[in-house]
Length: 575
Ligand code: ARG
Image (cartoon, rainbow, N blue to C red):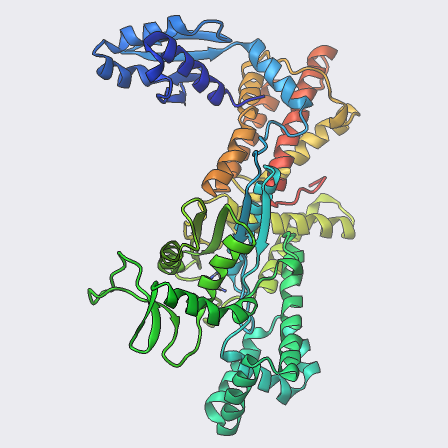
């Protein structure tokens, strides 16, 4: 059950080596899906120039060298190799895949340690729709890396520290712990923040208290720390409510917020300065990574200690990068964060390389998340201009899904359960079916549509296959006949399914979950065609054909369910 494109690449490379010498063994055979066959190899064109022979002649030599090949190869046009795989080869591979628990998904050896920084909402501000995307995309990447056998370390880099906490804690004392906790747990962080801010601006005594509180917080005063914990615990309980609704895999153990790095910041600065990587400029400690020039044509600083001695976002990220490489032993670090922070991360990575904290052997990537837009084409907000409250938004998705299921005759509890899966699936799949860096319009109608490349359509595809088994009075796990793709639609579906493992690997390599959604969407479409053209259980279909087709249905179902699980999209048993 290897991806045919990979098998063919290897085979053609062997043929290249035997026909033209081993120095050509690494040439890319340029295998592409073809209109006229299963695949075509275009390598003869490029190779002909180098060999000073006609492309057709080169193609003929490759064909002759492809001995013992499980298919037919024809030379067409100026020198294309049209490749058609034998039905028996496809049958054998698909049947093997059905027996394989991993469905052909490779295992990375040795496993890599992949640190994934994702979600990372800020305390005392409403978790907003941008964090929804970093959460969903990051979680899909974490699931995929785990499936591949990598060691994943999730890092939820919460915004949980800094000067605003002085006024936030004083406000907590003013309104009382109980009231504050209730408000924060309910997700009213923005309101809480705004109330504290208003007092800070209008009330001198409050302002003074808040400033003193910042100092006592930074000095680690036990009572202040206790109040900080009261505040943070309530906030995290709200975040967890969102995570639970979404079904993301983040737990409290994955929290590694800005506060965690606080004790490391002084040393971070000292070490960078001692190594000559950071210098004092206008009173601030800065790294000037080469190649970064500001609009004033002057070198751009990454400020790691402000001129007032305070630390900021970049200080924390420098401490974090060292911690992730040195302590967590990362081979790879993914930062699933908004695209608007691209410059920040390029500078942090460059500074990390300069300091030797991010060695060349460790791959750091900013997985840029595009902005979510409103229907007006601007950043997604409510009409009053405030960010939309996430819990309400998610609930709306569930409510709308429930409306759409109204006529299906489910009892209330079942309907709610399905509506939850459909609503969350719709929201999540919308993020995962487009490139992570594309900006797109948040549109419930489009996300919840039962047609097109949407969550509900994908969920429905699985439910439809399950209903075939119900009709047949059997279980997918019992469909263990061999897969024999006799009809073109069966053959196309089986051939496509063989690419599953390869696509999962590609998602990890490129940090692009939408490659998997595109594959699954194509799977569902090919299945539809198959189902239209090849009756599975029907009068006139003999038992043997029926068994072969049920086996193909079962394999399709497993690929869809396994793929949706990797994306973190829930699959209701019925719809
Ligand atoms: N809290 C930040 C925000 O909301 C994201 C943090 C991302 N991670 C990091 N290491 N800087 O924009």
